[in-house]
Length: 208
Image (cartoon, rainbow, N blue to C red):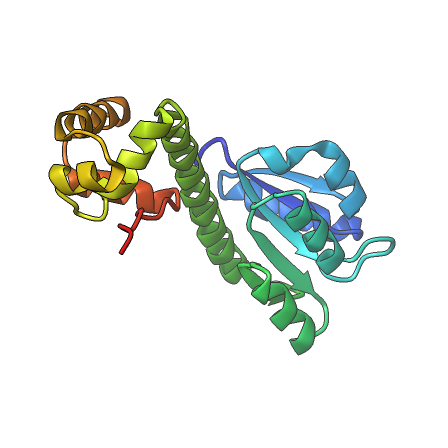
């Protein structure tokens, strides 16, 4: 996670300075912004890391920025900070994916624990996205026939059953099946099922 950064967004310069010092002391990269608009304009959402976000800010509140980030497809984990306990806001932000909601003045240990969880979550999310995109690229190399055969194979159907369902020869099914395995770089039906589950491909159920 050496390339990960913590992005601190708070309109109070003393808070930004203090949090930046804490994060950097832990050996983690840190950048600060005085508003949600500044962060959005920085295009940092494509980077690795997490966000420490003040709830109450002029022009754009923390929850409003969270909404904009969700709309933009930014999955970077958010840790909210607030000087006041606000149960409804806490519940709303956590429901929308916030990792934690800490009260100011923030406890350093609590903050670092939340940052660690957030960075691990970000790494896992990006890893899954990379795997998803890789599988999708492989699947796009399949012909329509190969894709159809694949959706029958993952139901556990035998070649002769698939042949009857698709009204093609069993030998043709074997050829398509072999090409599917080759293009996806796998050797077993179990692996094929796992790959399809990861990208949301549903089995093609036989017609009754």
